[in-house]
Amino acid sequence: MPHANGALLGAPHPGPYDAADRTPPPGREKKLSKKVVVVGSINADLTVHVHRHPHPGETLAGSGGEISAGGKGANQAVAAALQDAEVALIGAVGGDAYARPATEYLRSSGVDLAAVAEVEGPTGLAVITVSADGENSIIVVPGANAAVNSEYVGGHAATIKEAAVLLLQGEIPAEGFARAIDSAGENTRVVVNLAPVVPVPREALVQADPLVANEHEAGLILEQLGSPSTSEDPADLARDLLRAGFASVVLTLGAKGALVAQGQEVTPIPTPTITPVDTTGAGDAFAGALAARLARGSSLIDAAHHAARVGAYAATGHGAQASYPGMEDELPG
Image 1 (cartoon, rainbow, N blue to C red):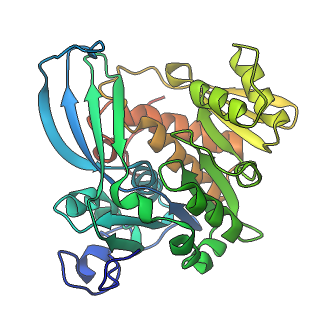
Image 2: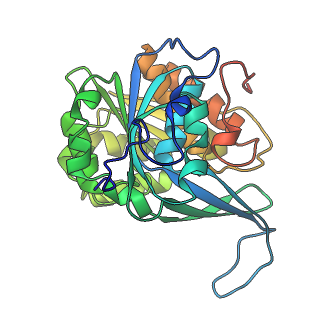
Image 3: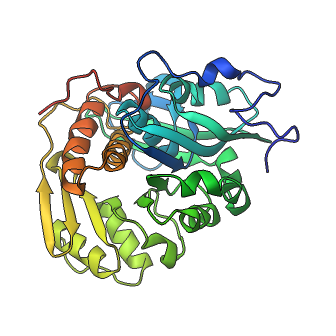
């Protein structure tokens, strides 16, 4: 439930937020896209750099320890906003010192935070280990994100109904996830990146158009739906997801690009060749950019081509939101 004072980050209340936080930065007052509404998590990321990831029971020396903005919902909202979408985020932070750094880039990118509640307890936290080759492992503590339940999401049903694109992930309660999809308007396109893969109602999940998933997530989703794949071929995996009931699928393949599956067609999407620095949040950059282009009216294939370039750009910088490109940045490829 919201804090006893009913505080929202987008409304006057005692605390570190004020109206200036919600003023779009210069040049971002007018958006080309229709609205993207993200219902998702907001975290503070604690990032540690290591030469390699530790084995079970092993202790390694690391460096860094930086606190930055994260959470898959917030990451994707920032990525979409930086790609010139009008974005609103429905979520929650705690009444602690992590709330402000967790929302730093949301504010500076012009994301509407009127539906972000301040709740009792801690802000969500992600502990991220990044190895020398740029690969990461992540442990997430939900914290305030657990408050994004059916009741809270239902209170913002009108905002969701008006969206051109509804963007969801797996870091909020399943009941909030399902309520968001139930609230979508007739013309709202639902984009789901179910990461992490958590149990959600089948009837809600298959409304995704597209489902965005990597190979591992896709396999888990098929198992959850009772249709496990027997093939290691990514194209077969994408087709299996279509047969499971999804209208379209974007299967991300890391450095190998992505596949777009819809109807009877599976289309490869190449990714630019880069030297990765930190892949943290690159998948979220992809999903946010995809949603922004879909809100603008692009085809799924064209949107995926653009998203692959945005995701590649993000992997060349440190951290998640801090590495995301704006419209003024030159994308690889």
